[in-house]
Amino acid sequence: MTTPIYPAKQHLLKTAKNLGVDSGVIFVRGGDTIIHPDSDTEYEFHQDSNFYYLSGVREPAFAAALDIASGKAILFVNHVDADEAVWIGVPASLDEYRNTYGFDQAAYTYDIANVIGALGASKIYALPHHNLEQLGAKMLGAVPIDTDKLVTAVHEARVFKDAHEVDVMRKANKISADAHVQLMRKARVGMNESELRGQFVGQVLGKGCNYEAYGSIVARGRNAAILHYTKNSMQMDSADDMVLIDAGGTFKCYASDITRTWPLGSRFTAECRQIYEIVLDMQKTVIDACVPHRQWEDMHILANRVAAQGLLKLGILKGDIDSIMENYVTGYFMPHGIGHLIGIDTHDVGGYPKGTERINAPGLRNLRCRREMLPQMAFTVEPGLYFIDEVIAEAKAKPDVAKHIDFDVVAKYRSVGGVRIEDNIVITETGNDNLTVCPKEVADLEAIRSEAYSS
Image 1: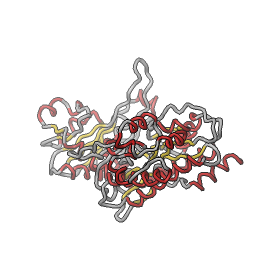
Image 2: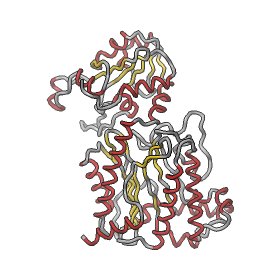
Image 3: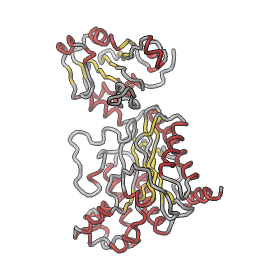
């Protein structure tokens, strides 16, 4: 028997355990191909994330089920007729699909109603965004359908990564980190941001990634002060600028999310280096502190304290550090959260369990996760410091904040734009495993950038 390429049944059983029931049927559908309006051109297909987690199938129009009582996992395969096979190729057989993905049974999607009906389910658990028409009108009218509980159960299952998932994420990070290094080696003054973005995409796709994990950010100079800058179209004309590249590839449907900031010239300017070193200190301190049973929001607060210490030394901030923290002053220089869960989705599910509220304070309100860190959780750690005109103006208008900022010194650093450094980690029993192996020390970056101009 073929060894399955994906632990689909284990993920189905894990999700069923989270449901906390002894019977019923889990039924999920994959995504369908979508056509551009008024054309016959398809959008690039990305599988429904929850369906991929429960099946491992990247092809459109499939479905899957689990009989909870017996533990029987069933894959429903999209039937391809002879006419369609001319265009897309002859598909694998039912047995080949069953063995490849580790299911107990495989049937075609046109048999969904019959196969599910034969299970005699007392209740069907489905996701609220999935179309259930394939179950048939008779079953939909006779069997209770629960579309509330499954989404929480599958999201909570996805939060905790198994060995297969960590291996795939490590590979996604390796491919993406290598692409980042290639950009460091090739970038020159006079190039366009779009050239670097294009080279990154070519590198990760060429090494086996399915697609970009998100819209890549290639931001030179002041563009780095736009957190989700995706125009990627400006000329890079000043050796004094830095380039912030936030980009990752998705490998076997698992994302990577890596950010590096480095000088466009061969060396950092004094101001750029000073801000960069504070952000690097923020990241190292937080990664060292990421161990089981600490709260994720405390990592954000820790990063902000390190930022406050560094900005005080530069004279950007002034006054008592406890007062700076109490007034969330550093939140005006890092207006985003310290990071987020990562997995199949870049901003992965499960960050805010039911009943968990956001903290309404600068920076903290944008945290994408408030949870206790536990083994097998995967996070990004992405501190940053930015000089955003609109945010600085907002700080200036608030006396309790403004008293701690020397705006004349801030003006000196405005040209820095922004710095962000981002790695992907998995919490272990004793600490964490950093999946991102990519240069970030000042000496290493300057060595690479110097080589770029000597070759």
